[in-house]
Image (cartoon, rainbow, N blue to C red):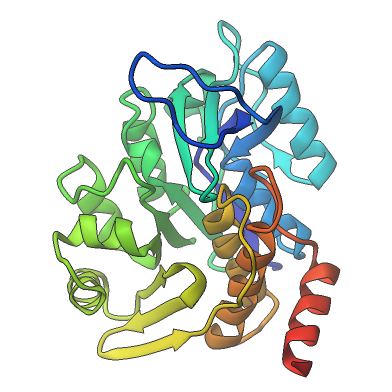
Length: 310
């Protein structure tokens, strides 16, 4: 059976605005650009789907303008949306501000995607070839976490579990975190998130604590900006170099990274090669404005080939 990505996080709509700098409290700034874009978990799924991995969204989506946008975007990328629209509310909205340094700041309002009930996933069963991805944001939603964790122990139990804590869930004491970590296949985060989660101040210490806490064969992927990423399993470490590009927007780069990494593994590539492709995807993504800026498989192959030629 072909591999699938079963994504259990949240698809939302981003109001993306470019600013020279964030305003101080009580102040105002003018944005150089503004656009509505589907984002959140959509970024990961679009990256995976564009690179050949069959992808399903297992989260809720609302009734309204933003829910319509989310469904249209998923349909356009060939992402299968497994649940019917949820009545009583719209999909959530995130204001994403990107400053002159290409760093982004978020303010999010949670909508229909922040709720999940046991019956939503009772017909869903993961197979041993599936990747089941969990976002740390899901653990923060009181109306979703319990149902999701229960499903992971039942219908999702056969899949290989992938966890991206995100910036708000970098706390090992969050309810449900231990339950996830004890059966994790892949941890994916950036350097800052790993340092915060492990309460350390060096990358090597973070890798040591993560690999010690995860199952023996679990893989840690730690993104390190333009320096690329680190792979770690047990005592094994490998730094996979990044690519020098001029970043204009880092929004969605980490999502492009893990989406392409999983798609590359599903295509049979070894982990170091998959990580190099993921680094390339992230490098391309930061040269583009918007959240779901991951390249297609063709664009990615052309970039990697060009870099190899020097």
